[in-house]
Image (cartoon, rainbow, N blue to C red; front, side, top):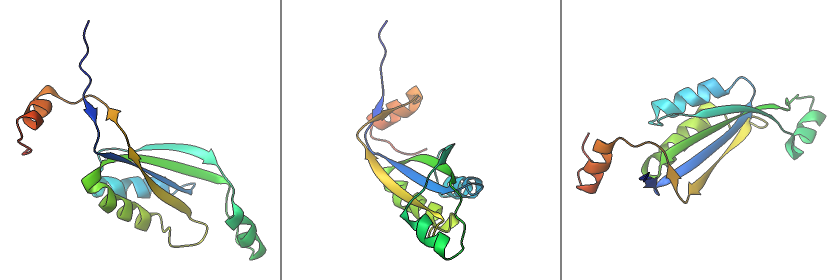
Length: 124
C-alpha cells in the first residue's frame, strides 16, 4: 500500500518554559495570535538564576510547564512575541522562550488544501 506523505518545510518550533500554572495563559495568547495548537507538559528544572534569586529571598519553583507550538515561518515572530508577553518573561525567574527551525514536519493535510497549494492558490 502506497502512502503519500505531505512534508512541510516552512515551519518553526517555539518552545516556552514557564513557572507551573502559567501555561494556560501562554497557550491562549498563542492561539489568539494564530497558532493552530499547542502541546504542554510538565518538567522540573533549575538554573544559575535560581541561586541568585534565592539570596534575595525570592523563591523560584523547580516545577515548570513546557509549551511547544509549531508555527508557519511567516507567523512565528508574532506568536513568539505574544507568548513572551503573556508569560511575563521580562521578569527575572519567570522562564524562557526560544525558536528552532524545523527541517521538515508531517501531519494530516486535507487533500483539497494540498490541491489548492499545488495550483498556486492560497485563498481560504
